[in-house]
Amino acid sequence: SQTIHQWPATLVQPVGSPLSLECTVEGTSNPNLYWYRQAAGRGLQLLFYSVGIGQISSEVPQNLSASRPQDRQFILSSKKLLLSDSGFYLCARNREVGNTGELFFGEGSRLTVL
Amino acid sequence: RKEVEQDPGPFNVPEGATVAFNCTYSNSASQSFFWYRQDCRKEPKLLMSVYSSGNEDGRFTAQLNRASQYISLLIRDSKLSDSATYLCVVSGGSNYKLTFGKGTLLTVNP
Image: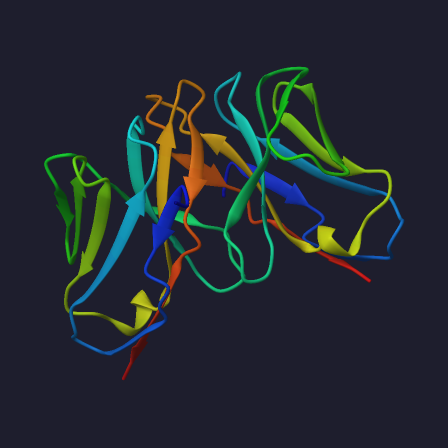
């Protein structure tokens, strides 16, 4: 997590409010970047991944979106939050050297929607 | 069949015990396999990769059986600090998307 920065760390938002979670990574250029969500009692769910600037793949239909405006910046957004959006959001990047599939995670953003 | 399925747990063991976790995966084309560790309210961290020949790192031994699509993790001489959730992780495909199991909670008691 030393090379992955996420903020905010914790937030409480009302239903229907917008959301923006930010992630920046250090290290080599053109990393693969990922957004995962971990809801209470559930496993990590892949939400989005990106292999380059402006390239976003969505894994699960939902009211969330992602953007990658810069090589080392990955943003998760929502226009209107739902109660079911509560969870622990984790940004991740692939291993810098040797594409072995390992991921390294940021410290996460814990979202509670009320 | 779920993509990655783990023992439901939780496991409660005394210090010094040996504990084994099992995991099965459904995609026979999966290429890479890992065990991650996640402490309470923290991010997952890589514990070890799993190789076809099996591999060991101190008290931890991981094994892979591709024919049975089965992965295991053995922890010997458990320590209090081993208490955590252990996640079985599988990747496949050129974009290296990882699929995580739900995890197994281990508590090592004094």
